[in-house]
Image (cartoon, rainbow, N blue to C red):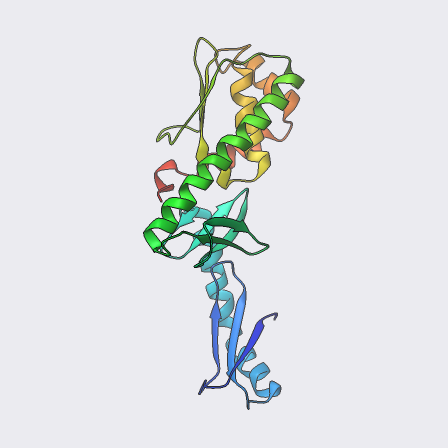
Length: 223
């Protein structure tokens, strides 16, 4: 079993933990032989797998932005949230997103991160909407962005499109499906067979994305 080992000079015992992303971390005193650490990990393997299963379940049914656990999903990948006392900025690293509010306060870091996510969501959806509109040869009206409570997107009778900016939490394929879905409504303002045939033409795997979004309750998306 893979794990990350950290030696602590002042540690008095070996400890094992499962992170929010499912990775295993082990801390041990500097003097403990590697053989004993391996034996300790092996002894706790059943517990680790049980905790990893809980983490996977948590990621499937819980909010994709959990401030208490300091995790956030961005474009389908789960990141740890780390608050830094540096210049005001947000940086996306391989496994974490660092938030550096000027004040260094947690509440300001959260507000800063939500504002950034909203801006990223709008940018991502605008770019994908423009690209798919060209391919589908349709002309949408103005785009609006909201934190909708009942849907991921909508298309008015005037072809004005509205999107839930929280789509930024999900992988690009899911965002593309919602965009294609709403753009298809420009030609078919219903959910007729012709509508779904048009969606499938541009997103052959749309049913997978549709099932994913059905499982993802909007009521869970609270920050």
